[in-house]
Length: 167
Image (cartoon, rainbow, N blue to C red; front, side):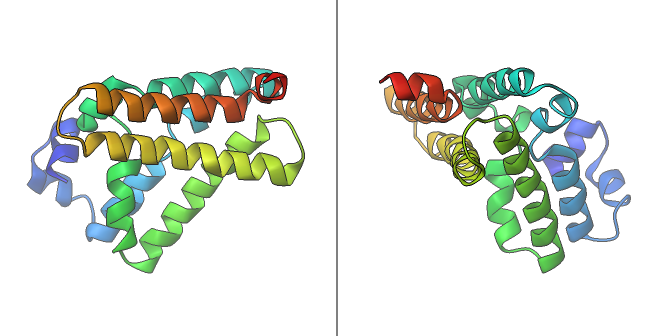
């Protein structure tokens, strides 16, 4: 939470004083940051535009820069562990937002609805898992890069089914 306060340019005390408890802070963080900027950017776009935004989102997300700079990256990898131990209200807020992300991803994919949903959840899992695993590695070397690159290539292949069918 100290990192969030610093990002907001306030002291930890000033930050905490805006919320009645830790659960309220987690809910606010979930609401503001999970799935962003993709959710905001893809709110009113065509399927083709949304697919392009998704591909860019995945490539930016699954990058060395994101892996080595958790303070400037997405909250999902770190937040997921906290949410698993949090109050059910926080877990419900997380489930709503992450489900919204998966639904939005599915909405820009092609194929039948069940296949789009499966691929959307796989993309989310590859993104969060890829960054989480890469951040756990001791150095920023070849292993970290390999984990991120593999997750990115696989996620992109789930978006671009035309190229999957040609293989």
